[in-house]
Structures are given as structure tokens and as C-alpha cells.
Amino acid sequence: MCLSTVYRNEKQEDNILCKFVASINVDGDKLIFEDVMGERMTVTGRLVSADLTAGSVIVAAE
Image 1 (tube, rainbow, N blue to C red):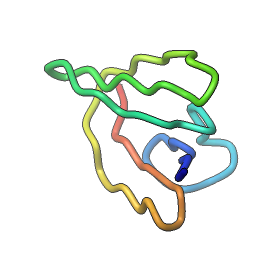
Image 2: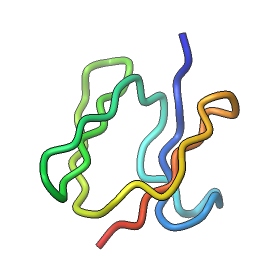
Image 3: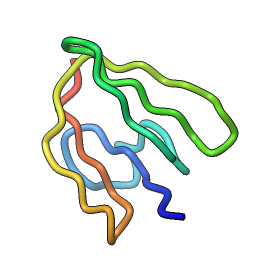
């Protein structure tokens, strides 16, 4: 299983939005991240990049 960390704008420790993300869903301009424990976080923005091998997702969030 690949779990990812979601970052705002760039991959830096202080930009972490959520960790251990198992799924990402899109609803219009909203990105919905669900972690391995079933907790959801919704962010308004867009996907910039996703490196699933490295487990990092970068979003441009408002």
C-alpha cells in the first residue's frame, strides 16, 4: 500500500496539509484527501504534482 503526504505549494515540512493519505477525490475545485484511518480533509485548490513512488502530493491551495 502506498500512502502519501500532501503539501501546500511545495514539499517542505512546514507545508504539510495531511499525512498517510490513502485516496484523493476531486469535486469541482475541491480536493478531498482521506487518510488510512478514514479522516477526510477538503481543500479548495488544484493538484500540482503527485509522486506516488516518493509518497508526496503537492497542491496549490487557496
